[in-house]
Image (cartoon, rainbow, N blue to C red; front, top):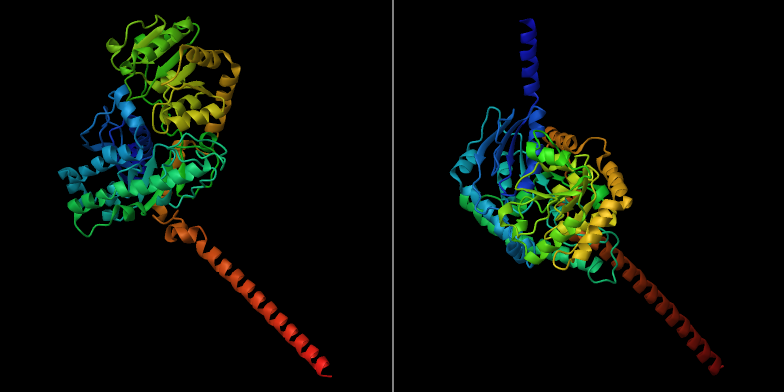
Length: 523
């Protein structure tokens, strides 16, 4: 009985130390949500009370984790992106679909009666201590933190898009840090138009374009919460911390403000994942190992042109007895001719597969989540980027000798053969992948614990705890335009003064000389 009392007392004390957190992650992308789910589960395990609004409620109850509302998706992306749709997306400036098809559409959820009620009458026993949102293109959701006067914490599933650094005055360092809408990596030359110059102009344009397209969110906020509400730019400036799915071992060295915290690989958790019995047996029976092939949670490879699939079939058949595990949404829709060494399934526990000792290589579209998982487990890759940041991701891995890149519009059977031979038989790729894995995972705290630490820090010490003084300066002050102008003015005044003095002295000398000469002539 005494032990039972002690246990109840310990539970009561520990629960008092927990915070109540609201996670607002309404974007209907499973690949994005995997990071948010693992973050919020980690907070729940730490003893914090987590309330979630998302399109992906948990299938089983989880302690301290409550789905208070499920967002209905207006667009289905999971296993629904065809080759034709990809071709349309590739031809766009990425800012346009990110804002118009995703961001502004997500903001319309602010009119939902359940969300309206929550915003105006939040729970008070206990109240919320912080609001977490995805920093992407629907920053209107930060209105919750504004209304409740609690810290607003952002989570980015990628390295920062061009329009995100200003939210926390993160130094952009465009001279050597390419924006993630481009495929640039490493050193950039000025003389090559697509490098330093293009990086600068592209970044400036995309920031302006994003701000222009998201102005409509001002109207959405004021429509649902009243005319006195702040504009979305003001809400963005209240962000206290951004957790970024990046790491310097993958994304390169750059200056970081304290409010920008790298937590790359946070989602790499295999809690609750199991292999299907049939799939587990197939893997165990792969005496020569296997290659894992997937284009992620959205893309349907069965919709790709027959010519592309024939190249895959021919090349994959040549590596037998090495087997191939391929994620296919609707296997029955695949073109005929699939090799006998290929096993297909509409869903697979990816982390369990990538950490399996028999895996030999990973063929991927270059999505950040999947490639980070491969790096965590030291798996070499063949990257076939399709859109968005995938080109930059794959280029970064190629530069580190952990991947071979192929162009899905131009690749030939010979190209695919060479890529497979390289990652399967050249020890350089496997060794490089192992070394990069060690660098990626070697940290004072793992990614999840780092994220939790800084969330708790901001809640304990306030929204301004990590705020950069640069947030209160204009661009011309940050760029020292005023200082340079003042120094230029001083130099100009000094030069003018010197010129004036010299001219005056010369005039005096010449005057004295002429006076003396005139006196001599008179004498």
